[in-house]
Length: 339
Image (cartoon, one colour):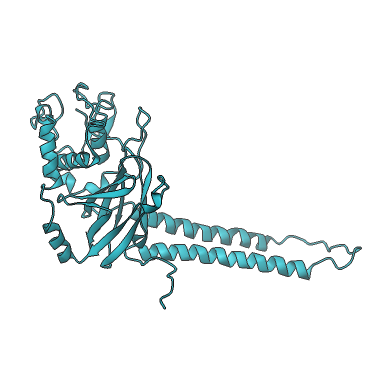
């Protein structure tokens, strides 16, 4: 009979190191728990009071002993800290060659979009051996996208992009969970990651995306919303040119500077007058509530396609945290051009 595994299967490049760190912390905690418990029991028996008139002997302190039980735990704690910080940094810095996927949490499902245009609900197809960067947001309440086999998760926050990444190492089917209570059907907000060999993944890609790539759908939406009437490539329109703007620092009307990234492009569309590029007036209407999360991601991909060099470095564009907008809603990390 097959036993119950202690851990989910380790199926990503850093899963084994996450497990090793976890086991190290558990082992150290268990060791000191047993050591302290045994010492308390031993000294309690060895030096117990044997009769009512007994007076304990005077005991002088031991400087070497006191230094030892102060320095050794401190060194062990620093090992945990440095190891954990190194691993955390690696898990929050996706490689530049990562394959980007957009994820949207919604009560009670996960929706995924591939740059090639393929869309999935509660399923995610990815290839082995390729870093996968997932840009996560929520359409309603707080969710948490959790891949147990890859040992990674991230909050899905309304109004904000949150990135996570992993490199699948084993073909197979793995669980997706929501790790943040999000309502009555939270336990049913599950899905499956299907990890495939690269050629199988290419065959799967070839069978979908009849509506075109995300960038192509974004270009159509860009035209339908009449964005082309203001954002001219020449820079002579009522809004700044979007050509080769992604990844660049721009000066704003308030004197500050900002870097154009995915989060700021999102804010530029939904809250266009929050920050305005120097030399332009806040004429652009806001599109909050008028564009779906899928359409918003497509628009961003189209704008990124206008900056080919920056698009190749996209994984570094969105940090792991973001400020809250003046309106009181979570906003993506600042920084980019406004119309």
